Image (cartoon, rainbow, N blue to C red):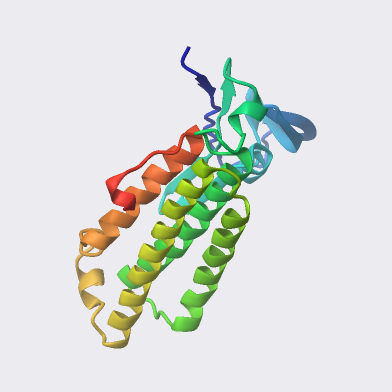
Amino acid sequence: MPKIMQCIFVLILFFSQSASAQVSEHFRTLVINENSGKVVVMQKGDQTYIDVRRLVQIAHGSIAYEGNRIVLTIVCSAVNGPATEEMESPTSSRLTRDFMKAGIEEISLMREWASTLANAVQNGYPVTDDWVAGYRGKAQTGLELASAAVSSSADRDGFQMLKGEFEAIREWSNRLLEARKSMDTAKYSLSPGALQGEPLSQKIVACARFLGQMLASGNVQDDPACQ
């Protein structure tokens, strides 16, 4: 019988508050896929609001900001599937829970590195080796944590794809740094689609999307974009 994946998709809209608005705040326990934690709930009329960052923490997921988009990645839990011990055994074809969490966090760190650099280059902001090194260092640490979480053959396959994405972003980042030094990045600010249209940029974006879906589903797969 095919496994049914239980996911929670949440859309939170924040509205400006007028001085006369009746707003109350209180603590509640939020439960997401059997994970629970305390959150501050704000109630205005019949609308309920919670902090999206706290939601992601409780769900053991990740959050990333891409322009005017907020991207949430949350690991799904299997319903009516095999027991957790069987799913996460060393011989299983499924990714283990610890690796899924570490992998999702690493994707978030790599996305932050790539999107922040792309935004700076496209807007003509100064980019230095030291500035980029901070984002690269965080992604390197995340990759090491993902490596430490590997405990099955499926995890090892998944890690190789994560590592490949990291190396692709590092190559792309180095190219932009060299272009910046030679004053060859003006084309990116003059043409908004120039950077996204480059083959390496497209490969990085396609692989990141695939890895996010793979880690959320828990099933290791192959994709040409991550080769």
